[in-house]
Image (tube, rainbow, N blue to C red; front, side, top):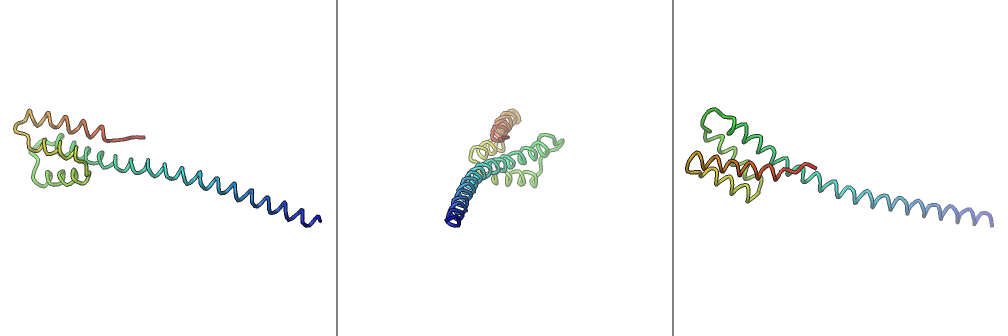
Amino acid sequence: MKSKAFWVVIFLTLIGISALFSIKYFAASKELGSIKVIISSQRYSGKYLDFLKMFIKLVIKSDKEVDFDTRLKLENSVRELADAEVLALWQKFVNSANETEAQNNVKELLGILVEKIYIK
């Protein structure tokens, strides 16, 4: 009789431990999902930040006219963002008729880039 009771206690203890580990597993799985979302948004923001840094370095801080290779590099970086709004503002900037219009378009472009960068 004592032997049966012992095995019942062992069995119930194992079921309890299994239930506890199952609960811990599902909680960790849910947390992992939310962490993946955060990391994904940070990577996406990183692309905007990389383009913003490159734009400032190669265009804004430049003392000379931007050459073809630099414009091509910037154009490719903008397209890699795969963001229609940023691409439209970029094209608006590139197609500016004069310096005043270009400056206004740069302000718009920089403003939207900063808005797109998420820091959580």
